[in-house]
Amino acid sequence: MKTIIIILAALVSFNISFAQEKPDSVQTLVGEGGKITFFTGPFLRNKWFKNSSAVSAFGGGAGVYYNHTYYVYLQTTSFPIERGSNSNDKYILNALGVSVGYCFNHSRVLHFVAGSQIYYGAVTNNKDVNPDNNIKLNYLMLAPELYLEVNLLSYVRLYAGPSYYITIGNGSHDWVNAEFVNGFSFNFGLLVGKF
Image 1 (tube, one colour):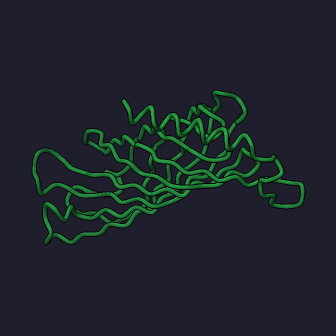
Image 2: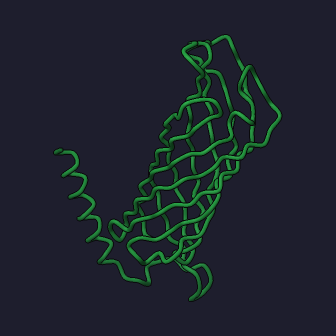
């Protein structure tokens, strides 16, 4: 509880420092035209794989907003994959990519964000379980996404919403293949920055 109070106090003091900045301190892309602002934050993804229960994975990244509406968000995360109770049926899906999209009515407390994740995904074996089984499957993953976002403070946003992974690739090993990796994900995240 003390940790939560300390974090909230730090956020409030951080907000006061942002409020004292001048509006013209924001970088401009072209003359008096578009503005670029920066943000970062962690997220939690709950992903369902085919014929498997949901798994949770933490990740994070950093990105930019253009004119407070268009965004590019670089992200990375790793999903554990397992099937049944067989300890040798454990793999890891490492994903690195970018999310691009549009923020609707960003100045409202509640607003929607729509976009798509574009990931390079690599499935490898869990070396803690089976260090001798060296597999690597490479996939391209596309995931349309829709989020409800809340302006908690002027520099803090929370978001939640679904995405659906569409996986492209021919590589397969045992029961892991592109069709297995397809599926829904429900995502939660925190963004901190100058929006």
